[in-house]
Length: 58
Ligand SMILES: [Zn+2]
Image 1 (cartoon, rainbow, N blue to C red):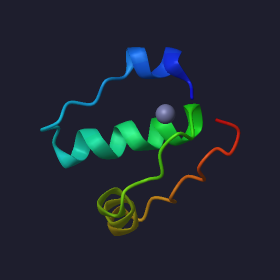
Image 2 (cartoon, rainbow, N blue to C red):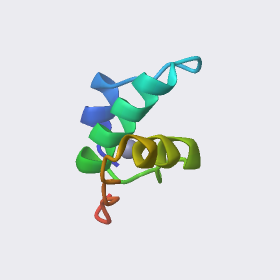
Image 3 (tube, rainbow, N blue to C red):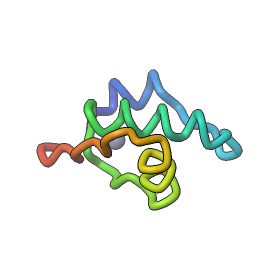
Image 4 (tube, helix red, strand yellow):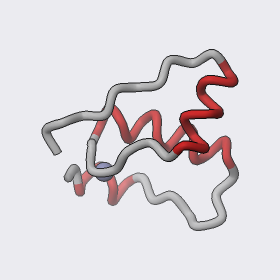
């Protein structure tokens, strides 16, 4: 887990979908400790944005 990245990118509990989508897209390239939630994947697909691959080295 990339704790340095996490320390600088804290996602609040009530964060809006937009913020969660941005967070998860960045997270997927910085760290792979968590899979993208279905709600974020669905929103990326709705926007026509490629779903990032989850890193496997975390
Ligand atoms: Zn992580």
